[in-house]
Image 1 (cartoon, one colour):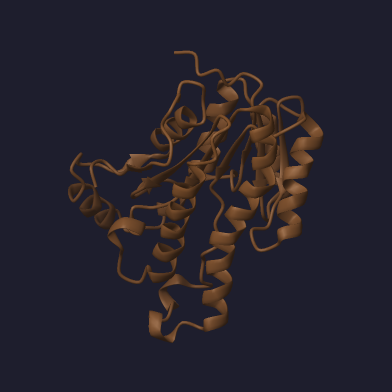
Image 2 (cartoon, helix red, strand yellow):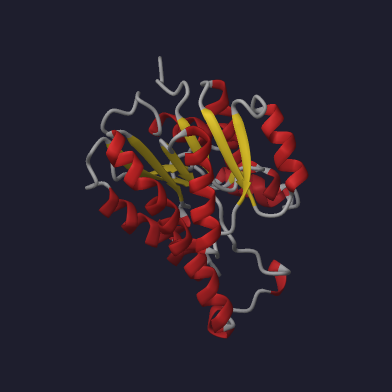
Length: 250
């Protein structure tokens, strides 16, 4: 199947590890031009650019969901480099408490922290899409995928902030689906996915999670990435406004 992605200009936020990195690699395999963003590790980002084909095919840009100026500069840098942005994969997130085991219960959560994290993880993505959307509409083609989570549908103990922000992205995409002008927008909502973030998790807990999944196992980052790349390609002719779980049946 020809995905029609050769030389498409792809922006993937938060792409130095996990699902974001797997997605960047697959776009590169399809001969797309790939811009990845990172928040802290310049050295890691440069190494990934070389892996994706070097400066002719990829670039890395520092990006901060909490800073509208950073977001605007990131999108503008891709447009200046390659003449536009055809695909946005909104994968970045800022959630981590200093020590997750010390995270207070919802009713005791510091309000400033709550509001800041919620706004970053909703408004930051909305602002990123806004910066790229005008060019997509002018050119008559564009693809947008927002990364969510099955917790936005099913919830999870202690996930009030996370679930609420991810569910907000679902509503955003349900409005974006009316953009027309050749632009399609969708949500991919993974369940437990085998990435570096699970390396420190007790294997017994992972096994239990797998057994509670209808397919009997957790997804890999590559499996999620394949869906993202399809949704962002010419092969996706009219899948629009959908929230698609990649969670083995959950």
